[in-house]
Amino acid sequence: MYCSLVFLAAVLSTAYCAVYNIEMTRTPSQRSKMIRDGTWPAYLKYKELMRMSNKATSSQPMNDYVDVVYIGNITLGNPQQQFTVVLDTGSSNLWVADKTCGSVKRAKASNGEDISKAACPKKTTFDSSKSTTYVADGRKWSIQYETGSTKGFLGQDTACFGGTGTSQLCVPKVIFGQATTIHPIYGNNANDGMLGLAFTSIAADHITPPLIQAINMGLLDQPIFTVWLTHRGPVNNVRGGMITYGALDTTNCGNVIAYQPLSSATWWQFRMNGVSCGSYTSSQGWEVMSDTGTSYIGAPASVVQQLARQVGATYVSNYQTYSIDCNSPKPDIVFTIGTNSYNLKPENYVVNEGLGFCEFSFFTLNGAGFFPAWILGDPFIRQVCNVYDIGQQRIGFAAPLH
Ligand SMILES: *[C@@H]1O[C@H](CO)[C@@H](O)[C@H](O)[C@H]1NC(C)=O
Image 1 (tube, rainbow, N blue to C red):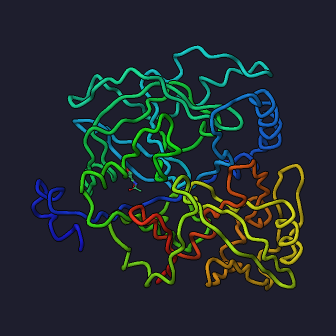
Image 2: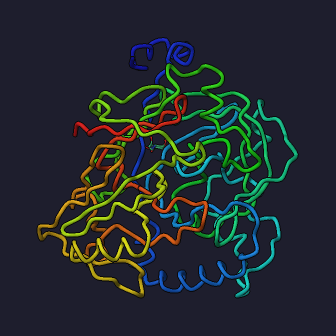
Image 3: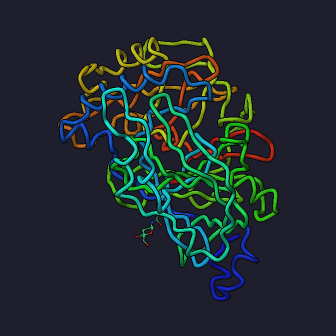
């Protein structure tokens, strides 16, 4: 079913349309921007400092290899205020920068840097006084990362997936975060916030995520969404993919090859049986997660080292990344999930971000206990469409059609 069929009756479109195709843009990676302008090594040091000073935190820390590249539009309020947000299957809260962002005094980082203001000026901010549907909530809100936090307060308003003037999925009475302090990793990004697409159990304060709320309200044909990312590589500020809410994306993806049950409905977490590449094979098995909000693939150190050896990648220590020959033939990296194998091709794991060398798009994840040992980020999702089945708590994989 296509929303465009009811476009003529624009006023009625939300009433009849229960499948929504919403475009994503690929934006420049902040990490590669910082590598290019020479500020990345200093940032890595800063991150280490923050990591040490935040050791004592008790809340569930989120992954903060947050080098996001896929963004899309949402609106909040009536009349609609539009924001560009990260479409993130690795978290569960909706938040945007608030009008008061940066005005709240916060403690300084241990190196004396005031991190509270840095990220705010470049954001489009939400002004609740201009929305007739806004309801104050009063609760404080925060998301803790290993290296700092994003925080503010909660509010309630209508949230629509998709930009003004497009076919939108509008969800009334969504509780969302209004950020007054934004973690510096988001500072120079082209995004104003984040739309978390994982489960309620990992949402701050267990606030129902907007998509789960849409499903609970019966606003979608099926309780699923499909993510398809284009294969065009590191071309930025262009159409980067599509999220289809409420259905399998049959325009861009083939039939589902297999579904894998989720190990827990928290992150999009499931079991992966093994990995192989060249002469390396491991059938150790891990808990892994599918995450649109991570631009590379995170894996345990020993695995990353083995894979790097097989594909001929070498570690560049001051950038904490691997360089790899851009063009020479390389083996596929094969993931075994359930009884199926999924081949990650060199075209998807070799990335050229204009750094003067190509990168092997894997990084070491220091899996901390409860956290999945692997993050299957964008290179994996470019290779196979991911079908996120909220209703049956499983994830499906399908071959992209182009
Ligand atoms: C988001 O909205 C802006 C401004 O209307 C537009 O230029 C951009 O293409 C939109 N992005 C997506 C992914 O639809």
